[in-house]
Length: 365
Image: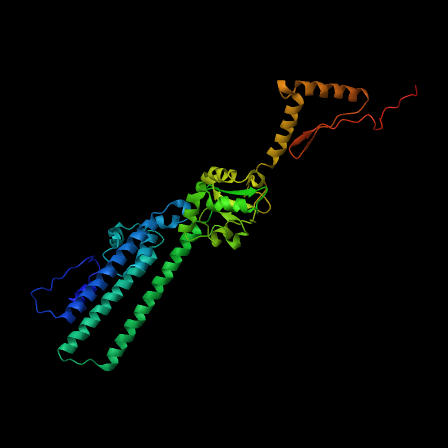
């Protein structure tokens, strides 16, 4: 019974009633131990299969796009599950229903591997039968047969591992990190990037809870050293980071575009004196992380502000406008010009003082 339990990989639970039997305590304990080991192993296999299935159907945001290919998923299942496991999906066990892809070679290797297993089983059965019938095999032939089987098994295993590694590398090369296709944005903190309040909001804000959970579940880091101190609010490996050609520092935040609004809400919760500002970076531009997409927009906003101030600020500032207009006419009559300058988001109107030297010559009274 213990041997049958070892061979059964689908049994999830088993109960044995030893009452009114001649089974001793030692035998009962051994049976219970064998049953427990078999069921725990089968439950672990079933859980592993479910985990692999969930992984293969994962969202595209986490970078597992390559597992959407049926042949590659088949190779992953075959790597983790034992040969001939009944938990393997039916589509992967029926070669007629498997789509012909670049994993064809891997499928052939798997078939060859199974053939070698069958040959080994037949040879083992033949040897056992010969021994039971009292037939003695030639030691030289028996040794040659054993060496041939070992070499065949080793070659098949090496080929299977090589094909699996090749499939993984091909799938990885076919799905590089493309920032715009995956709607990934690179943001810059224009001030207070190193403030503890900013780090606290990124690490503790409820608005970014889903981002943090997504990164940690994927086994990635929020602020890895190889990213130059930048915050990563999406699962990103070092290989993907380097393939994308990113050059970030401690003032950068990389996130999905759909999470940009949540990030801005989280940073608004920081104290006003330590509240940062965000600016979108253009990854395709020259320079580390590109130039700002809003660089020109900033100067346009300043000019627009100056025009608005010059044209009028409403009824409550009418007296100030009249004073400015009178000052401008006086300065214009003396030949001077009022210069409008935008300094630190404040608009200044420098007015020449009367004690300053005038550019217009005046005669004595």
